[in-house]
Amino acid sequence: MIEIAFDLGHPAHYLTFRNVLKNSENLGFKPFIFIQEKGVLKNLLLDDGFKHFTRINKGTTSSRISLLPRDIFHLRNQFKNRNIIVNFGKCSPVGSLVAKTLNKRSIQLDDTEHASGQIFLFKYPATEIWTPHCYYKDLGSKHNKFRGILQLAYLHPSVFKPDKSIPRSYGLLDRGKPIIIRIIKYQARCFIICINRWYT
Image (cartoon, rainbow, N blue to C red):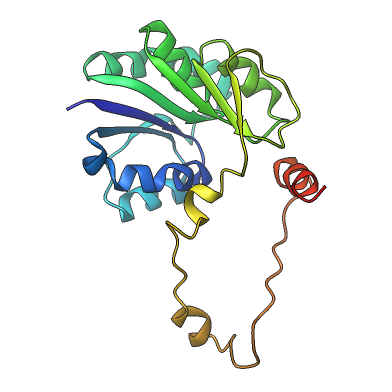
């Protein structure tokens, strides 16, 4: 069976690919997941029954950039022992760099324009780069834009059915429809820009 690699560095990256991963058998591939060690991400994968390979030791005192050669070396060996045809990542350079050294495809998703260092590192080795249409930067000939946002991968009505018993259990529906306010960090430009351009 063919294998597809997923480079996950954040819980949101897992959510982006979760429905694809859960349907991997029906789609005809076996996932090879490697992560930057984060407790929440690890727990999400374990709760959903996914095995994974940890690429960065969270407890290290070294900077991430200094660990890049080590991670590439270890992951390259993992890739060579598997039938991996493509690597997917979300603004993650490690998998792209490994795929490039083995002449494999690498598809990157991005919605975080201010992550200049990561973009610089994945832009050259990536085969394709996909971003929402509201993305301002031009990442060259490999760059493709789609109408929508990455969050639709797990919040679109075709894949997400809200459980109405949850708000009822908290009494949130006793006085009609509740209003939810989501507070985000000011630096999260990916949300601010998308919302701004979506409605203009």
